[in-house]
Image 1 (cartoon, rainbow, N blue to C red):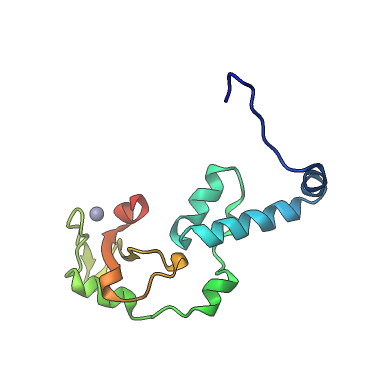
Image 2 (cartoon, rainbow, N blue to C red):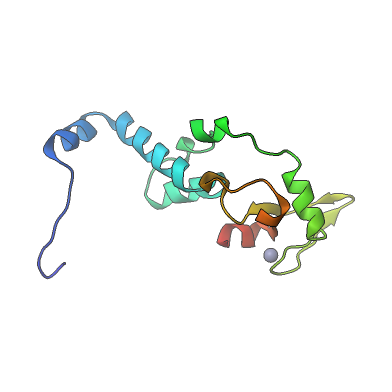
Length: 130
Ligand SMILES: [Zn+2]
């Protein structure tokens, strides 16, 4: 494609709208990131493309419509005996786990259910990598 100098872009009317309205760019970027990435990595995705991370962190309308099970985290961590399923990390301070998270195997954004078989206990590092 480079050898043939293939190029792409937006139709002129859309390009003009994007150039004249920076808020429109931010709105579109937020909708794309919210629709396709879990909240835990949205800030990283936005930073990777040079957008401010204040676009992330607020649940999308679709996410707000679906309620998360507040007990999901505890049920998953219990099922994995409070250890990262990759490295075995199990740091605790008293009864509080530190740096251990319950991840959805099929992302919540992809309609993954809040049930233990769809969960996996991961330390913060392995959750981000996952
Ligand atoms: Zn780990």
